[in-house]
Amino acid sequence: MSSIRVVLIEDHDLTRMGMKIALQQQGELLFVGEAATGTEGVALVNSQQPDVAIVDLGLPDMDGVEVTRQIKAAATEAGRATKVLILTLTDSQEIVLAAFAAGADSYCIKDISSENLVQALKLTAEGNSWIDPAIASIVLQQVRRREATVEIDAAEADYKQVLEATPLTERELEVLSEIVNGNSNAEIAERLYITVGTVKTHVRNILNKLCADDRTQAAVRALRAGLVK
Image (cartoon, rainbow, N blue to C red; front, side, top):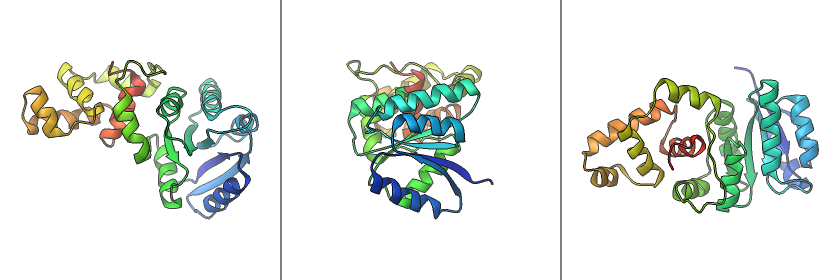
């Protein structure tokens, strides 16, 4: 397997240097560049075409949400599949939802360990979402709130193709809605008047159809695809 090409966009010098050293020590990763501003970062990503761009939200010239949006737009236009892993100190629900709306693939808090960061980069490069536990609860709690300030209504092309080929049934959508609300299998069974075994079957089918590894990833993909209103 070839090395995962990584670009780091982070304005804090010490943080950037520390992360650069940590990433360069990982044999599975290939560190191909760094930038201290959003403008430089977007240009760097366009020139180096990394597999994953690590983007800090608090950049001096433009926020990480806009950087993410520009990276994703350029990648789509060029036919690339550059992934974006957000790295930040904040767990604000508005910012979390805005980052996903802009196309972010994964979201990490800055106190993440080097080991977990490497795992997050691997999963992200493979096309999966790595969501920090502190962020997962926000996504699960806020996805269905109509008063959320950011509307997310677009699925990525691959999700759309999957869903068109194997659409969710009405019951699966009901179970997915309960998953997004953070309910357990037992709670879903009670709310929908079905057995726990039946819930497990629906959950398994939902994960398969959404190409999700777990319930959190399924909730994130439901959020981005607008499956749950």
